[in-house]
Image (cartoon, rainbow, N blue to C red; front, side, top):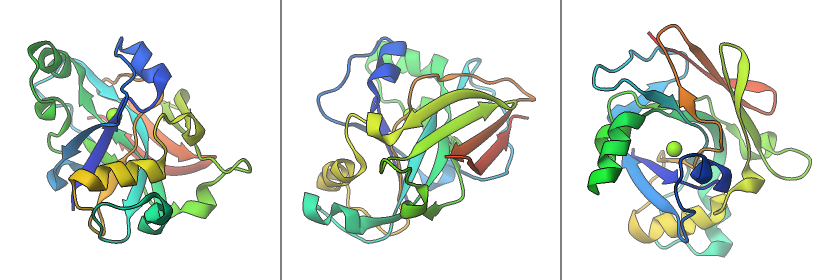
Length: 204
Ligand code: MG
């Protein structure tokens, strides 16, 4: 499986890092070795001094496809969850300044926390969107709603599948809302869809 990540999919998050809002989705990949399952600890990597959490809505692909057309996009996912796109922000700033790829800042071992998946329909709020959030040491640090996405899930599937064949089991990290921040050893992060806890990770 592979992990396809979307950058800057929420305008307020692009603004908090002083980035322009992209006109098309910004994509990057994480390898399967980046996966960290729900409940497992993350050991603070030695190569960064500024480890950040980014909570994101995750979409699990249920069908193989290339060049997916908009009217069929909904057929490609049945389950969603929340996860964390852990980022070595100091390394990412260096990569950006040098015009280099982001992988050493974002795609390292265990940098992608994967929550427990639930059916898409179960995740929807009455307005037909998905509310998700992250707590750090039991205080809310990030809240997002899929209605705020610059590119919605179906459009992401169409766009991504133009470049990368989607395969069953692939996971899309759909971008983080505002409120990203640093973690320290001893912190505990917990991710929610609505009020349902689907992911936890302690920093060791
Ligand atoms: Mg992210």
